[in-house]
Length: 530
Image (cartoon, rainbow, N blue to C red; front, side, top):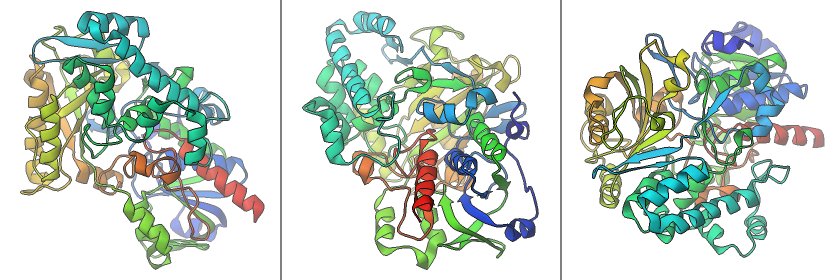
């Protein structure tokens, strides 16, 4: 099935004039056509609500969309891999019938080291055990125990049924405590261990520890030596997409197809999606005011914008306590995303070849413990580190449709970089950041300089400007323990008829979709009880 939204790469435009849209009666206005906003709209429209989705950008999808950064190349500017997308949303919105296909990244995580050694941490236990046994035999039992903690947490909090704690309101701390019982290790991982504490508890080989450290800080403005970062590792390992616990994978056509399918579902159900329409103000209980001054009425407004932008749109109508809660959540990003076009895949010195099994998984350019600490400290000072931690993904090896024949795409997700430089601006230093990323990769690759055709560099301010995420924070605010579960912002707000549906709400960041569903269910429940 061909996606109507994908056919125009998400540039859906105006389905009617602003005057005509303002003249209609709407039950709900959704601000922001990111994947959660579109999912929310689909559920509300299916329930019979008259829904209008307003997107400021010309293209729907937010951080999970598809653009053409280079001629003939389709890439998502930010999102790059699926794993936490909720199976219930996939099923209920008929994504498979709409064309949704994904390739599980069973080749796992490959990590080369400067001493010429390397380890391939497959997502298949037997193959991964064989690698650990070869690489660090004394750590095999510890490796098993480390992974078992994650399995126990996932089974307790995210079983494959209605007891999944991601569905609906966040569980209380008491409920989580009951679910975890006397499992002290699981509680430490969920609440207080740093990623360094987590790996050092189970593993002795420093290289093997380093291989995992980055998994505790993905998109997080914290060091792997900071308390609570082990929970980031759990969050990203807690998915059940396709019934495969912890598995991630490549969406055919690119990650933005997820948003496009949600948009198709919403429009098919009767929702109206308009792009290129910016909202300036939310008027609780009444609707919105556009940047052009036009008013569109609706008793309910659901914001998929990040909470800081939502707060700004509410202005004086924002509840004081809610304002304090929103401003309490850190929202300054520390990641840089490079979308790279290659003439050949990277050739890693530790395992030579330009079409090898590790190219079909994800690859880390690791840092030593000292480099992690120094890099984070440098970014906090507004400086660039000596080396970046980089995670690499190659969509084109799984899906030849995203790049011209003979070329490859490489997504580079790297940190730490400052949101604001102590000296200079991002526009002035963008090329320097690009060179730093390539130098960081070049420590492990023999051909990175000749392989790269072109690269797009998106720092936190670019993500803020292009995608609309305050601070360039890809999760609409930190996902560390003080800001998760019952401490995360809720779909319901104290303002009349105002709801949130983005990554700032439970269960947190990444391409999940259940945030949008949860918000829709809250709206429907409240309207039924009104």
